[in-house]
Length: 136
Length: 458
Ligand code: SF4
Ligand code: SF4
Image (cartoon, rainbow over all chains, first blue to last red; front, side):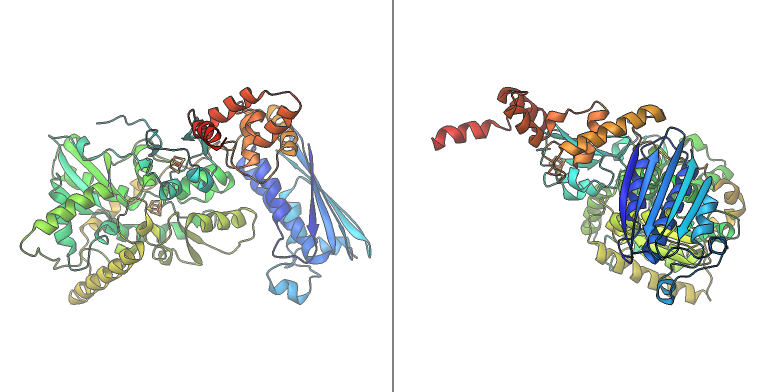
């Protein structure tokens, strides 16, 4: 079953509401607590990446019997060098964003750590698409 | 002794309840529904935090305890009194005096629970040195523990697996009595409780098969009796001459003392809403680098407990005064405290843990993933019919919870007054049927006055 949520770029105060909604729904299923935690963390990181870097985006989750598919798409500057972006500690976040505690470069590696499959594609100047699969 | 097998202390008196729905609106886990004009609690969701108790205008909600009457007459009866109870009385009554008066209520011995806090401090230090999930969340407040079990299942592994101070006190008393060859079967330990959650923790402890406490007594009941004794007394009672515990131990149940004893970074959070807000963040990983979380369901910690008769702010101030007095005694003893309980530390440490805490399934739609998905699909469809402003006229706290009740077979779509109107318009529901539905939710007789009004008006 599929749900989609809008994500607003730059709105840090509202950031996290989409992943929080998904989390709430998933708690109604018989999913192991550790898996739930991984989902919560991965989705929050992914959502905050959009808030911190893009103008706008969306999060679509598809709940299946034994796994969850998530697609986070945004319109924004995109990622120049995906390989580097996946390195721990690498971040293009502006100083302002970092001072708020976001963009420490833990986002993408952390998402990868918490999901079973991850696919990142990006077109500089247009936007980024992140697809995740997490098995229950 | 009364039935031991209830898992909730919070109960609703059907004779007093008028079905006003105040409680339903404040319930933090959405556990309350109005059925036939009366509030009904869903046991799998209730965490006994007592938020409903605070708002009920009819005083129809009560906290079930074991009561003084349950005291076994031929047993040696010990009352475990939390410091917050002493804080209910003006500071000119000494702790010794108050405890003496408590004893008069029918106990053979009285003990202050917070004696165990010096032991807790050691236990925290030990746990801080271990590789445990961070942050460790204090297990002190049982309402918070239950809340995590119901709403934050993925955080149950963070709960510190340590007994509460009153359990440590109970353990100590048993060990100490055993050493004196006292028949432990004849020993009954009663905890004077500031809240419903502590009663539940004693009846159905989390992470333990049985509690060390034999019964709980509502603090209000003991307060009234104690105050009567104090007022009738002609002479002033005695005072402590030795500091038998660390001064700040008396503030352990309030907000902000406990956290100082877990090395590293820690936070103290009190009040149900604040606790929920923070756990939500923690669960998503917003919060990092925190080693310890002290959490209390009540504002100001246990001073705000629902069974505390006094003003919570006065209570806090009085406990601070007590802390100062104990500090003076401690200074006179050149900084030593003579806490007898600590002599049992070595024996207590291996017994102080509890089993892992598991989630509760209060939110679950269905064990079976496939069935749960079908139910969720239905919930979504139902939600598109409902107005979405959570008016509560259906007897459920939100449109979402009505939808959930419907898929669980506990309610029907005609409970929604908006859907009802549409159904009537389309001749799917007769006005008489609609009337029956409303009666089912808000109670028979509730609509009578409108009949009368109709006649009088016309
Ligand atoms: S607050 Fe709840 S228990 Fe109290 S009268 Fe209203 S509906 Fe009944
Ligand atoms: S803060 Fe204290 S009084 Fe309030 S629920 Fe928790 S343990 Fe009970």
